[in-house]
Amino acid sequence: MNKMAGKAEGEQVIVFAGMVLKRQDCPVRDVIDNIGGKWNTLMILALADGPMRFSALRRLIPDISQRMLTQTLRDLQRDGYIGREVFPTQPPSVEYSLTPLGQSFLVLVKQLVDWSVKHHEAIRAARTEYDAAA
Amino acid sequence: MNKMAGKAEGEQVIVFAGMVLKRQDCPVRDVIDNIGGKWNTLMILALADGPMRFSALRRLIPDISQRMLTQTLRDLQRDGYIGREVFPTQPPSVEYSLTPLGQSFLVLVKQLVDWSVKHHEAIRAARTEYDAAA
DNA sequence: CTGCATCCCCGCCGATACTG
DNA sequence: CAGTATCGGCGGGGATGCAG
Image: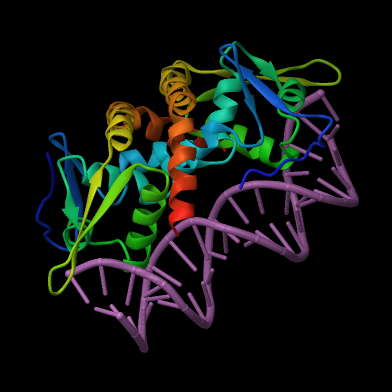
């Protein structure tokens, strides 16, 4: 995940806003990886309005494979963003929901979406201009 | 607030906060991809305090390869986050700096860092607990 | 209905060598 | 100093099939 190039002696750190972020076991990487995944943020948004069942999520996000749906949910559950509750019905049903941590994170995701929508015009413009210059 | 809208010809869209996000050419993906990359956010942070030369960035981030340094800078430049200025000295020197768009984005990154630092304890706790349960 | 297992492709990223 | 070029590993993620 986060490979260390330096030795134990040369402990690489980065200072930002007075905080020391060690390259190994960097707190930010834990979060970045969750944002960077193809489906993670979308999953957080999907659960924004309340708990949802597995099949409901499939319907909500039609173009996700079963494999990635399961894996994304597991990853987010592992890091404490979402909770999983199994109901012993027949056939069984499983409900996923945002934990307090997940809801806290949702705020960031929403800001990210807002910023994206607001600036994606400028981004695309810069992109075409750059490509044209080349 | 988060609902799937109908589709006409396989045109998948997702509605969030009243905004329609088409799956193809999604504005959020442009931003997400920049966050998700291994070095992108770090580069933004590195330029937070002002312009920096190529070699200065190398020293600041020791464990980045020359290849990825160049590529990351190019990508961010292409999307308009950073600017590049060449000084005709001998040998030549190049300075990179955040554009207004980049500085606007920097705000988000900082919030991300703050959130990470504040909650990474909870995340790691959830992670070990999940692994223990397994 | 809710998963896990398997196969496989492809793009990220690192290592290394070469240039103006 | 500031790049470019090439090779190769590795892991993300899609498609499909099987199971409880």
